[in-house]
Image (cartoon, rainbow, N blue to C red):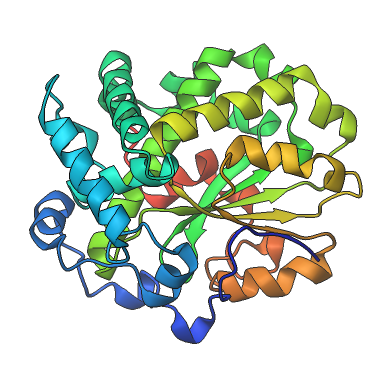
Length: 335
């Protein structure tokens, strides 16, 4: 096992985790996320094991310096050019939670965080992200989504023991050249935006249902079959840079953990550069594993068996059977 972590944090154990959606179905099923979350945002916190793992700078864990930075950002956004906080923070439990994401992304440099927030809101308005969120996957990709998945196998299925959505990407099976024969770069980028919006909506729903903050996801990168030539190819580099830029500029601090599986021997030589594209400040917990004997115990500890796909030793469905990468199966509104 090879570890790449900038913060030491305890491994989440099953005994510390919350019940799954199926176990909590009687609670919050009729919850209106916007109404209930805004009304109770002051009481919402991260579950303690995750709060310790995430570290300072989050709701309920602010230092004096971070409190001052948050207060300063409130003042700056309240003055000068009008800032529509309701629109900007639509996917967060509170305005403070939104501003803290921006501040953490910029290491609590207030001016940089304010610029990030203003640029993000301007982008959302100019791209009409609210309309993209309501589109179907086919309309966003401008092709049959199932055809795209054959060349671009990535899925969202289930959640970890804290309700965080889990996204799986089989990088070793990516064929960017074939993908670009059925769609184009603009559509691929917009699909990532669409996908991110669906995930944020799921986080909001799970926050409401579980009664604690769920605002980050877990990403599992499966590198089985990945060659160095593929990693260094222009289409793959462009894809990684495009996705990373969107995430850093418009979905800051949404990545809670990255788990790399089946890392080939050459990965150690390129991992620092690749992971830096996703996490330039090294704030995200990243775990890198080689063979299945290394990563299977970790995934079983992190993800309940019924939520873990059969592909990775769980009791859940095979990812190949997850329609449209998981959105239809999970009940996310595509239209």
